[in-house]
Amino acid sequence: MQKNLGKWLDQLGEKHREVICRWYSLRGYDKATLVEVAKELRVTRERRIRRIQMEALRRLRDILEKGGFSCSAIFR
Image 1 (spheres, one colour):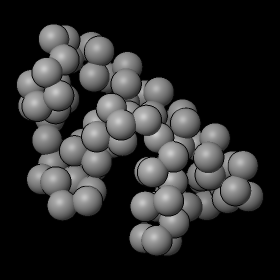
Image 2 (cartoon, helix red, strand yellow; image 1 turned 90 degrees about the vertical axis):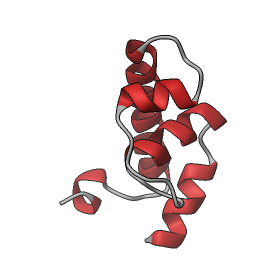
Image 3 (cartoon, one colour; image 1 turned 60 degrees about the vertical axis):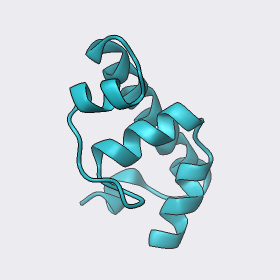
Image 4 (tube, helix red, strand yellow; image 1 turned 120 degrees about the horizontal axis):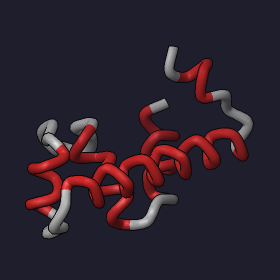
């Protein structure tokens, strides 16, 4: 699954990938709050980061489903 996760993340845009990796402490990042992520990515509002995060999660769900995976089965 780790191998697939990397492929799935690579299909996201750069900002979406960065937000997900920092929020969920993937790819060597420490877990960060949305405020910290906003500062690191130089985004002015936490609300904008939250929107990017939600868009990224929707895109990941679509990527998984197109690959024949069920999100509910993976995240049990």
